[in-house]
Image (cartoon, rainbow over all chains, first blue to last red; front, side, top):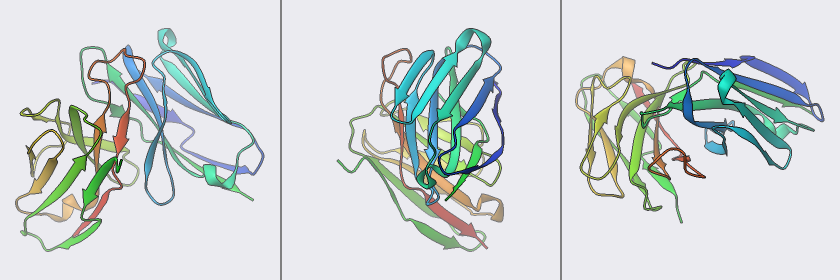
Length: 109
Length: 117
């Protein structure tokens, strides 16, 4: 099956710093989503982005499908950004998402 | 709109006991999913239901059964719980039955934390 690798596995930032999280995948995809899992365990969808660039406030994401990677940018980080960020992809012809192992982000005040 | 709801939130079982995790969504989605999350493993798919009346195995189906009771409800059953099934279980539903639509998003419930002693 498709492989999804996220980097870095852990990241510690000071409040106000910017960061870039990366997701590499091993095959062509027609669905890619980024999720945030907060410290209480709730999973929230951030972006549906199989290709191109989207922005939502301080967060933006870019997927370059031809090169099989996606980037999640967090600008001016806040303590509420802490948690685990997951990338999940869906192969063409399939109907289920495969998740990466996540990037754990800690933003300290 | 409650979104995706799961019950119970916490459960402790003894080895060999059975239980059913309940999931319901009020977004009129066709597809529903059960995942388990273990430390350092991300989320792994147990079973899914692409539409009412159908279910399929995911990556880690052994030891579990599912029932798609109707469009809203999708339950996960552990017939004889084992310590290896200690995990956090998430139910999800999906908007957009066909990838490539403008939005095709999974919505997650709050999770059930299960411990098997």
